[in-house]
Image (cartoon, each protein chain N blue to C red):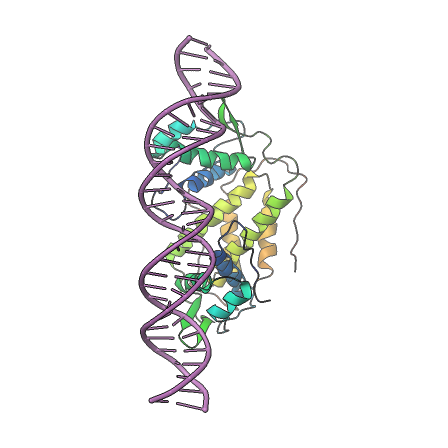
Length: 141
Length: 141
DNA sequence: CTGTTTGTTCTATATGTTATATAACTAGTA
DNA sequence: TACTAGTTATATAACATATAGAACAAACAG
């Protein structure tokens, strides 16, 4: 079982597919250069239409995480995350992070707990040895 | 200007309204017991229909952050975040956090950078003095 | 060249979501 | 009573999601 989804959940199926694959990449379970199942096959495995899988794969291609080829299929990009980050993506991501953390703070979760959850999540990730050209954005007023 | 939105962005207006208010609560700019603008007035200020604002307020009520009264209007709940967290909410929030952090890791952002962004975001929050009944969920396999 | 595999594109349809627009109703409060 | 403010109902237009079927195009194996 390479991937499981909730067909009746509130989050769209194509988005769940994207999310699960993003997590698989971050955790090193789907390393750079590794192949994903063909669109049609994954669609059969998940019991969904192949257009739905296609939409998820296409999202990942737009995000620069996948390379899609005619016969080669879907492959995790080797240079996905080398080079400097897209400024638009960084801005957007920071915004989404702040909203998500604000939700926890508003719900009464203590700062220690929030940082703890962040670190617990990242303990599952497989970070490559080096990373350059990345710098914190600081905290705007 | 108590709140600004992007009418033509990809995220729904009612969701933006919810997000901005959640952030205002977390940052202490909208403390417990404080009042929000009436639905119709905020709708006029933002240039949207009052049903759209109503949907955002209702979301916050479902999340336990607002109390809506006939004449009292919309007020930030005083006990929003006292007591133990809803287990369903905690599970869901942790899942969303992991997906979001995984996205950054997959994009090549180093662990240091991710933690830094988390801390920078939380530096803007106003945490209350004490917090009990909260405990980390650890990192499931 | 033939055939298979795989992603890509197109049209169509059914259902759900988002946003707007009117209108009316209900409960507090002065 | 009258005002304020949330609540509910109906209708509509536009967009998003998921499914379905068909055909097309490139890469590769034989």
